[in-house]
Image (cartoon, rainbow, N blue to C red; front, side, top):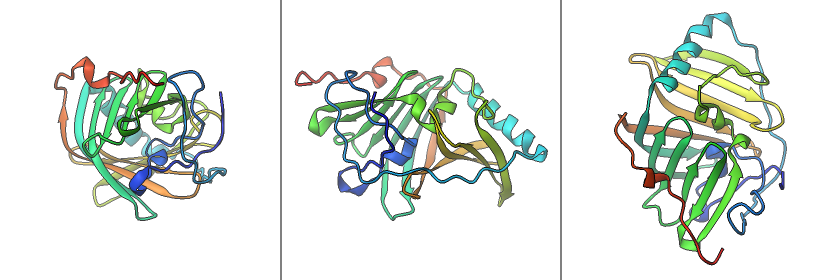
Amino acid sequence: MMVANWHMTLISGAIIGPILGLRGGPATGCCGRGRFRSAGMGLLLFCVLPTLPAFANDIARAEAWFNKIQTLSADFVQVASDGTAAEGKLVFRRPSQMKLTYGKGETLQLITSSTWLHVDRPDERLLTSYPVSETPLSLILADKVRLQPDGYETRGLPSSAGIIRIEITKNDGEGAGRLTLEFSDKPFQFRRWIILDAAGIETSVTLQNMVFDQPVANNVFRLPQYNDQ
C-alpha cells in the first residue's frame, strides 16, 4: 500500500481530495491502475483543544442524528477557500454506503463501502480505490457513529446564529485530519461538513433539499466494470 499525503485535483479545478480528507495513495491491485494528479504534499496542521462538558449534549445529539437515519438523498454544493467550487448529488445509505456524483456524473463519482473509497472517472474509464479509513468521514460511515472515539480530539464550538459546530481532529495515523460537522439547532439537522487539507485549504460541502429514509436501489452503489483495467 502506498501511503503519502496527497492534495488531489480534478479537471476544471474542482478539488476532490479535501471533500473526504484523503491522505494516502491509491490501493495497489484493488481496482486496476491508479493514477491521480498530485498537486502538493505536506503535513496537516491542526488546532487541538479539549472537549468542554457544556458541549457534551450537542455531541450526543449529533451522534443520535446520524444513527437514526436509514437513507439520505440531497444536492450538495462544494466550496473551497482557494475559490474553486462544484456541485452535484449525494446519496447515503447507512451505515457505510455514500455516493457523490459531480455534475451529471460524466467526469467524477465518489462511492464508499465499509472498506473502500472508490473514485470513478467515467470519461477516462478509470476507477481508483483508497482505504476509507484514511478519510475523517469514516467516522460517520461507521456502523455506530461515535464522534468521540479513542485517538481523536472532539470539541464543540460556540454556537452562532442557531448553528452548532463539532470539530473532530486526529493528528496522525489512519483517519488523520480535521473534520468539522455543522448542524442547525432548531430543528437539529446536519447541514455541512468542512475539511482542512494538507495545503491549508478549507473545503466545505453543504447539503440542500434533503430527503430522508426513502428506498435506495442497490445498483446506485454498483461499481463500473472497465475492461481495459
